[in-house]
Image (cartoon, rainbow, N blue to C red; front, top):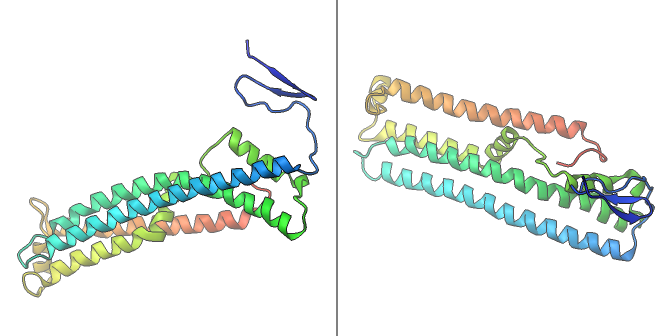
Amino acid sequence: MACIIHLGSGNFISEGGRKISEVKTERKSLDAAEIGAVAHLYRGEVYRSTIWRTRLDTTTNWAVVTLGVALSISFASPDASPLPLVLVGVLIIFFLMLEARRYRYFNVWRARARWLETHFYAPMLYDGDLHLEENWQKELANDYLRPKYHVGFLTAVGRRIRRNYLWILIIQSLAFAGKIAVHPTAVQSFEEAFRRADVGPLPGEVIVGFGFVYMIAWTCLAIWSGKNDAKRAALRKTDSAMG
C-alpha cells in the first residue's frame, strides 16, 4: 500500500514523491524565506550549467588536438600518408556524439537558470511583481518533479556542428584535399589525385566519394537543426515548456 503523508491544509506527498497537492491554491506572492530559497536555487543551476559548459569545451579541445596531430603526421614529409586525416574523422565524430550528449545535460541546467532570470529576477527588478498568476513557478516545479531532456539528440548534434564542429570538419576535408594536391608533387590530373587517395584495397574514388557524403550529411544535419530551432523559437511563448 502506498504511503501518504499529510502535511495539512489539503497538502499531501505520495510515496513516489509525485503528488504535491490535492487542493489547487492560487499563489499571490512569495515570502522572504521562499525568495531566498529561489535565489539559492538559481545559484545552484548557474553552477551546474557552468560545470557542464566546461565539459563541452573539453570535448571540443580533444577534437581540435587530435586533428592537429593528424595534420602534423600527414604533412610531416611529402611521402607521408594522408590516411591519418581519414582516420581522425572517426575520433572527431566520437567526440561530437559525446559532446551532444553532454549538451543535452547542459541545456537542462541552462534552461532552468534562464527561466528563473526571465520569470523571477526580471519581473522583480522591473516592477516588483513576480506575476505568479502566470504559473511560471508551476512549470519550473514540474520540471523538477519530472526531469527530462529539453532537446532531442539529433538537435543537440546539429547545434554542436553549427557552433564548432562544422569548422573542424571543413579543416579536415581541406587538409586532406591539400595533401593530395601538393604531396609529393603538384597533382597533374584527377586520375593522379584519385590514385594518391587510395587506401589499401579501397580505391581513391571510394574515399573521395565517402568524404563528400561525410561532409554533406553533417552539413544537412546542421541546417535541419537550425531550421528546427527557428521553428521552435517562432512557436514558443513565455508560458511554454522550457528549453
